[in-house]
Image (cartoon, rainbow, N blue to C red; front, side, top):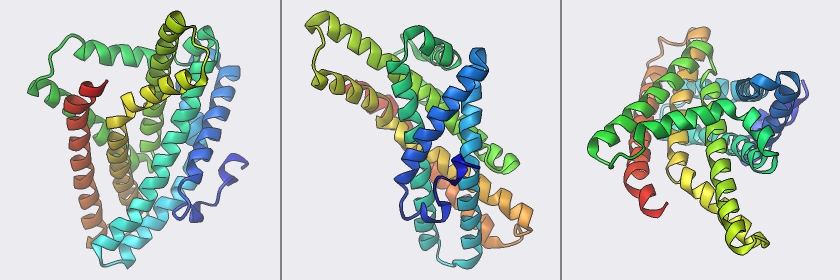
Length: 279
């Protein structure tokens, strides 16, 4: 198939940045196909189309990681190899998110609302849960438990469907893109009303603000979800290949899951106590 053959998945561990461009292309194609085919359901269908394009490459990469579990005895070396896969998955996420942010910002308002209507409703629901509340330890626990739910779904979906975490992570990329796009548009509108907004420097300043506002903590959340998804996918492939009796596979996946919880905890700390100080 055309999209899945754009890159060599066996070489992506050495050139993970190429996944950014793959994710960007997948997002553009998925958005266009879903919008012109099923306009009223674009928000969800474009996520499905993006995932369908990404699955073949991710499958090859995860299958290779499961084989490494059986060959390598050093947990540290194994984690180094896993980190390369995490990196190309992060670049995939960033590519998808970047394409969708640009679509939200530059498409006509009505078109953007049609495409991202489901994502915008998700943003409203999340904001209603924390709006007007003073940051306390209770809020910290609530956000952490909510993110843990997403982490668990990444693990469970990857185990049950092999690569189900891709759907959750692509969905999150689309939600973050809608939030960033909305913030950028609102800031652009405010800038235009004050100074006429006619300089590129102002535009890039707004875009950078939008990116940092959501990705200061979001990048750590994404990494934790990918680590959990990788753990679930390794277990899924091990079950299919009959390798679950190997203790190294169990040990590695358990270690990955614990690391994902630690990274997620750090992400919540940044989101609750540091991001509000700057944004």
